[in-house]
Image (cartoon, helix red, strand yellow):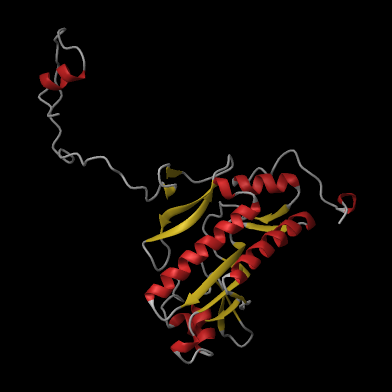
Length: 277
């Protein structure tokens, strides 16, 4: 593709209503076009980059024996009713519609339930395990506020991966293999030295999770890095080493005046106020 043949142009400014840094930069460079809040189209330039990224990820996933598939966007409600996640009270991001015969269907916002239904149709014994599958697929989520640009809006491309194992030990070993595969991806992207495996808050099934955070000026999260271990923590879950204040929650003493010109420094002040050190 010759640059002279492309129809896109760079822009001096991003749309006034675009708040996400990643989308602002990509729109100005002509890689994506904003359709509406949380929804973007990829231009030829953007699609070429996207396909290159997908191919690198695909090669690394195949390297650890994961198999690519593509599941449907339309979801039948019976499958999700089994887990209770069809309820709008429990999951408030569903996009739902009706077929012409009145049957209610949903548009996939994640695919845990569909992959279980698919795999249990084929797996008949523990001897069939382990199995790992992944896909690149559009997700649709009825987010109240779409503020993360192309990362997570109302429609976005997700690479999701699922694996089933016969033992916890095998699961944990494969989990580490996946982490190493993603590290190789980031190194091939040219971001390996600035990307950290980061402890973060969990999702639907766990209290905590891991995420990959890349340090950049357009970043939107705060993380804390421990230099001695190269371990990173999202600010949401960063541990605190400070000793808890034993006086937390104590009744505040009434305000008063203290007039003593001989009080110099914090130590003298705490002694005069009878504050324990």
